[in-house]
Length: 301
Image (cartoon, rainbow, N blue to C red; front, side):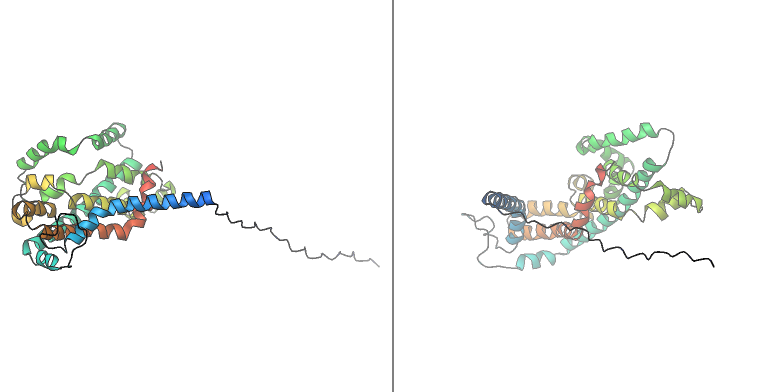
């Protein structure tokens, strides 16, 4: 009779314990505490110096006419008055100026994102004749000061009969080499497998752009959009040169005219300036994390 071989029982392996690192807290020595205190004080001084003009402008809007330039200097008013803000907001021309500037800024930002992103996609993913020549020429425009082409730009828009129209404020500045470069750096880091999969599914170049690249572009679009909106909102020289119709005055143009015509009402001017700065500050507060996190993307490649 054959004897069945006995299989030795396999004992369960002993439970292995992964040694954990003991967490050692760095001792706060007097020297380290002094360095941290100096960093905190230096940071507080820098932040205070940066915010002082803005805070003074907002608080000056609550001062009476004679308190803004009082001697000796007084930061806070004796009595807080909201009349300046109420009066400037009840001015139809100021409200119209904010509305027309906001409308132009939204159109300009949308157009800038679309045009610059399409150009960035072309330079990042497409191969066409003259690409190696055109791309350096595009980058060279980043180093040309805007004031040097101001006269020629004015002649061009005059020949096109664009003066005193919203188009003269929007169209000339839509294309930006800096924004094209920034978005292109992001597109270079998108895996080519996504593009190849879209092409296999039957997408053409426009389909790849709209269905693959555009949905992934939220991060650079935030930076480009904020930059475009701020550039339009804060523009002064170009509107003064091309807009003479009061119904199309931009916010900076309106404030400059207000200062020239009603220079004695400084409290009212400070209130208007504070309200004009509010949209940019609000946008930065909303998107500050995205801006800080994505501003480094230009150096990825």
